Length: 229
Image (cartoon, rainbow, N blue to C red; front, side):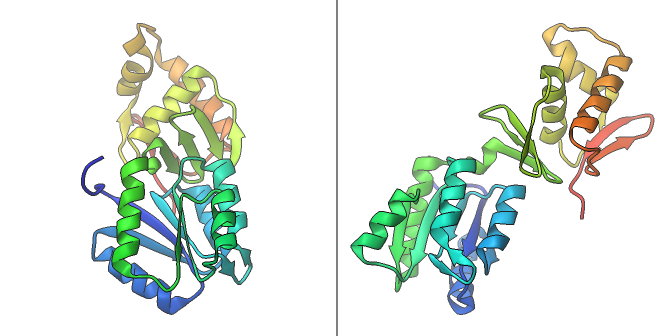
């Protein structure tokens, strides 16, 4: 991958507000979108709901050690790049960071230009991993593995239910007509079905996803997925 990504959404887990603010300002001047988290719990909850492009992670946090979150990421967001950014810079700590799943390790104090270069180098290797995930209202699709989860619980869907949800998620924020859904989800494969098939499939999908608020019916037209506030 050459050049910068169109959108680099970065989660920065850091309890030192001054350092966090400096790094955030610097990266945002270079077209990154940076979201700060002051505890591991806050970051962990956010990662269950949405997948960023990359995570910067401090080791010593008020509610534990960053290695525990890194291990969770490796179990649940395997390809998501993680860089430890920490004052713990001796060789044993660096080795432990990599053993716990880090892709890179930067010790404090550090130069902002060096951090930026390390981030760019890592993203050239990994690409925008976030693009493999689609999310809305706690529902997530991993397009590489063809899996679906709802608030971190994996949900088993039929092939038709999966294709329907995938099409709605790919068009998040847009109202898609019933006719277009039938054409794209069924007819494109030569499986000609009627409106009742869509109605039944949608009902089963909603039941399996616990009647999600983010899945809207647009009366007499079709459906729309949209994030809820």
